[in-house]
Length: 199
Image (tube, rainbow, N blue to C red; front, side):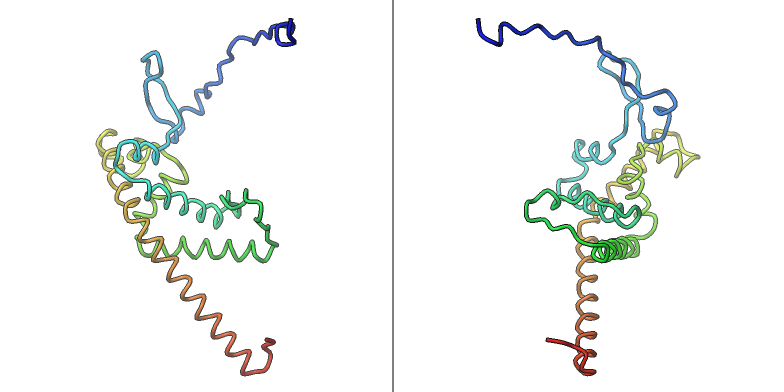
């Protein structure tokens, strides 16, 4: 008899209900749906995924949405889940590089908001950061409309904002890099003129 056959059988305890509490499920980042038994239920909303599965947006839009969200999180919260952090050659920075990264992220977000306008940028925040369901967004933005119609209208606006995000993000990043290069070159020239620049 092998070791595998000689081991005792493991009996798992009965399934424990891990569903959200009624108070949690009533919040705006949950949406109405049908469960596996076909009964009405509530589940956490993932509006970006739902737009992608519908075919309303493409993979490029999702990728730039994640970039925007990383910048937004870094500028607001001061932390970011970097995809580069898992590489072997990744070197963690100090407080100065962290603060510089946070400032640059905030600057990119401000540039994107200025280009897109505050309304379109608000839709990005609601979809990507707050993860509100479309029906909840519709209730907040269009309280006079029926819930279904207001949700559809908000979904259309979110698709528009996500569609223009890749070009807007690239333009904002390019403008930021050009401005940084100009300032760095001007500082270098000033330091060379004053003799404080060490080569």
